[in-house]
Amino acid sequence: MALRPGARAWAVWTVGLIAYVVAVLHRTSLGVAGLDAQARFDVGASALASFAVLQLLVYAGLQVPVGLLLDRFGSLRLIVSGGLLMAAGQVLIAFADGVTGAVAGRVLVGAGDAMTFISVLRLVPFWFPARRVPVVAQLTGIMGQLGQILSAVPLAVLLAGRGWTPAFVSAAAAGVFVALLALVALRDTPERRINAGPPVTAAQVGADLRGAWLHPGTRLGLWSHFTTQFTGTVFALMWGFPFLVAGAGVSRETASGLLTVFVLTAMAAGPVIGVLAQRHPLRRSWLVLGVVSANAAGWVLVLAWPGRPPLPVLVLLVLALGLGGPGSMIGFDFARTFNPPSRLGTATGIVNVGGFVASLLTILLVGVILDARTGGAAAYDMGDFRVAMSVQFLVGAVGLAGILRTRRLARRRMAEEGVIVRPLREVLAARRAH
Image (cartoon, rainbow, N blue to C red; front, side, top):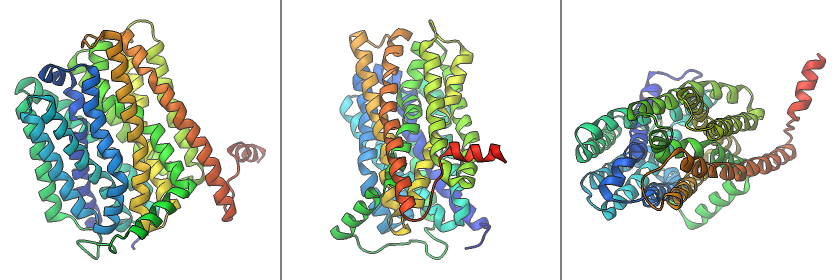
């Protein structure tokens, strides 16, 4: 492969990126419609949270099966299928007037979303030289968050102006568009339009799953993704908009602006974190721990603030949360470097489970706590959110313990293979001595 990717590689990546942008639009559409959904379906916080939890449960539950299908059938077919599934789900939601239709729609959205990101990520090693993969992967994850801007601004405007059905029909049309675009313009590899792997057998599935899971580097990727990604996903997917409007007391327009700042921060931080991961591959876990610390510090500042936090404090929060997406991409880099190409889809799927399991648990817990404090009424204040959002610290502590344990195991495995990772304090001390 050439050291510099050509225009063809960037064109294929752009098509995949557009598919991922639209997938993020679908994923986060319920977040900006949260208060509207409560009114339309006459449900409380727990029931509303269950919509997002079900979507994430489907997403997380399908990651490993989709990873296996990806290794077998390639990116093109899964991206097309994912776009059509998400479009069908949004059509169901657009015309639903009860909980059943909304639930079915979110299941389809979750299934289509599950097929998209890891399929796009799978394209990168085929089209770009290995030394560029960490940065391009970061660009994929971060540029994809433009979908959050599409849900936070245009979709929110459609909801406020044209209403529920036109807004979600428009989102469905975007899903059909990306499926057609991928069908026309996407290629799995430079050599083949469709890069099919060998037939999937039970023995091969078991071997790939065991091999990927038993390597501590894969589990380090999972726990890194678990801990860095969940708080930003909870904010963008479900509780950020209600927290900002009902808890912090800002206008809907200001809340949309803050969600946009969240996305722009992630887009700016992604390339920086990608370059750092590329240049210092033995220190990637320290980047992860830095992101986790920033996320925790942002929430401590906001939740400990007496009364409603002012706008500058909310800006600091979204700046901190914006680092979570780029930080979670390091988990996929662990999967890539600790696994052979033949099981990369499987390992990537395992890693991608982490953040979404943490997210769905947190979304559900926040909803349960809000309902317990308000008796099921959608009349929240900052005190309610202060208690509910604090559950994130418990989830983060579990993830942090997982990172520290699997990092130790991964370094032990690397030492057995002849790669010694010196403690960071020793490296810094040696530099000071010189």
